[in-house]
Image (cartoon, rainbow, N blue to C red):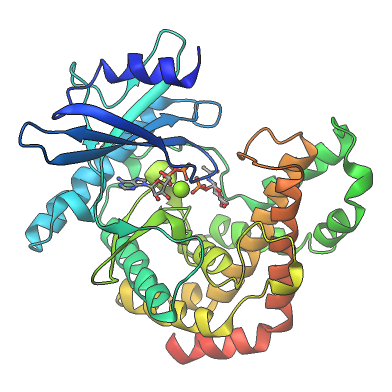
Length: 368
Ligand code: ADP
Ligand code: GN1
Ligand code: MG
């Protein structure tokens, strides 16, 4: 069944306000299929919704996935209301189906969910200004702090070993050995780059395993295009993409924002001379994130923030490279060699961070 037919059937399960007049594909994000629904109301105004086809190859248990999201957003909503905020804009809102479910499953097992659309806000693939990036840091730091009161034991692990970098390395080794699409011969340099940094892959997961840093409820996918920035105030208002909210370490949440948002180029830039980790953006984010977390981080966590950035960038490169070797089965790709281009930008960033290491440590000390 094609996606258009699937959407037609899925929409019958939901009661939306007004009549649907337009469905646009958003072409954003590497995982789910995201659409914007536009509805015309009786008074001729329009109301929009986000419709997502959930990637069930990746998220195997949709009930648990959606239970996490509903529980986390309900929890956040209470806090937002107490603080006098707007719960329709400051967190995701799941629209229930007519039979009160969190999503709808078609006969062919495709799963769809609907969120209220967050209006007058934008997500960015590159930081437009240092100030915007700082604002996103405060918001992610805040989010982290708010989740510190969330009952972690009620959360399901939606993707096992998601940020276990050592396990990611093992999966890469396995992909190299199997070489199912005969691409290993083209990526010797990239493989070498990773293998030289084998030790780095253990640093963060060992700290967690040995309880040297605490496990917390974390977002785990804190890239800049998962946060909505208000078009007028330029304040970061809502963190989206809650599929991977799970127990983890704050170092990954900090690090993933740096990996993506402090880069001077897009994640899939082909011209590697454009790819750098900007120290100005790194500084703005470090300052904002520590402010947003308001004293909740341990000394060890603060000390390890730059390492969090480096290791998650290496991990992400490993994941893109693994997917390239497996024949592009995980991340959505839009051109030949897309995953390889992405892997290369990540490795370039790792190298750049290594070259700027002293500076990163100094900046971190200034705000820790
Ligand atoms: P993926 O898991 O594929 O990355 P996301 O949940 O991040 O999917 O959604 C993709 C994009 O859709 C986001 O980057 C954001 O631009 C937009 N988006 C997601 N949720 C909303 C929402 N509730 N309102 C407006 N835009 C949204
Ligand atoms: C994916 O869903 P999206 O596009 O926000 C991925 C992240 C990666 C990121 C790389 C569930 O994020 O882990 O860091 O791509 N999400 C999942 O851009 O694997
Ligand atoms: Mg996303």
